[in-house]
Image 1 (cartoon, rainbow, N blue to C red):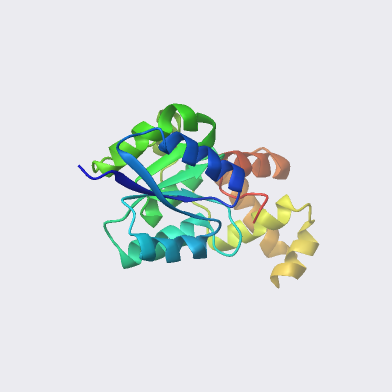
Image 2 (cartoon, helix red, strand yellow):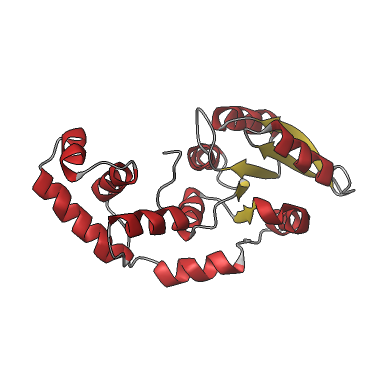
Length: 208
């Protein structure tokens, strides 16, 4: 049988080298290409048509979610596994909504990468159990609107309501209403608690 063709996408060369080292020891796999950002990933996918694409989430130029959407738009049957340091259920849900069929924590790479590639290539979905449980617990119950996300990112940057209002061109009273809704949806005690929850779950990230 032909080896499973793998494309590795990550903006850190050392991390890609680690993936290459794992794959080169597998007789049924071949690393056909590497990419350092989302745009390169889309181009490399077109050129090499890999069986499985390993996709980092946070990258310059184009992030992993957008790159996955672009690849799946061109090749609906593409198999993408998201690689991330984030344990947040919200980011996992975003990745799956974008068309990814696997979600792998970088901390478990050496243990789970090979099995995940084989499973995904065979048509299965792979999600860490703890993230799957968190996704089930939160599904649909606390989805923030785009405007609430804008407000939450401003709050995470340390801005007071008046500053948030100025940046988003809305009234301070409207900001106050959005903050109240955010606290209720996330089950947070205050603004700082809301930011902590959102970062932990991957609803927002410091890179945004």
